[in-house]
Length: 98
Image 1 (cartoon, rainbow, N blue to C red):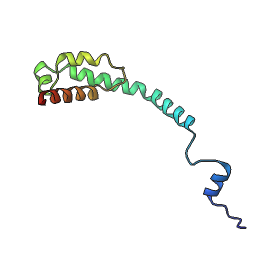
Image 2 (image 1 turned 45 degrees about the horizontal axis):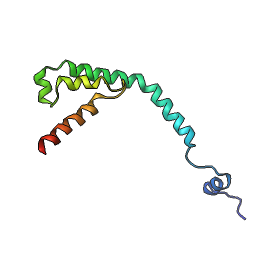
Image 3 (image 1 turned 120 degrees about the horizontal axis):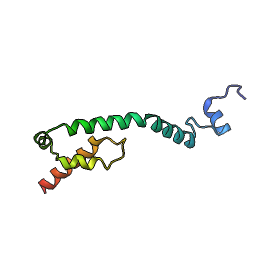
Image 4 (image 1 turned 90 degrees about the vertical axis):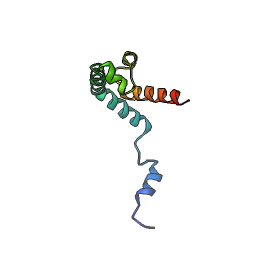
């Protein structure tokens, strides 16, 4: 019998996996989201402020209206308005093609 035990055998014997437990992963993801929340909220607020400074003509050029910006305020504070508005523009383009 060999005195050398490879890692795979040890993992099987002890029941240890190479990945951390699901509970630990969830805890770390939650902790990361919590710590980074202020940065995401600040970024989303800055994006909305930048869009709010655009004129009606500039908004129309990118396929938006002033009411679209109002709709963004219903989103959670840390959600980027860019994704929401991109989906809105795509939806309008789809309706126009149909």
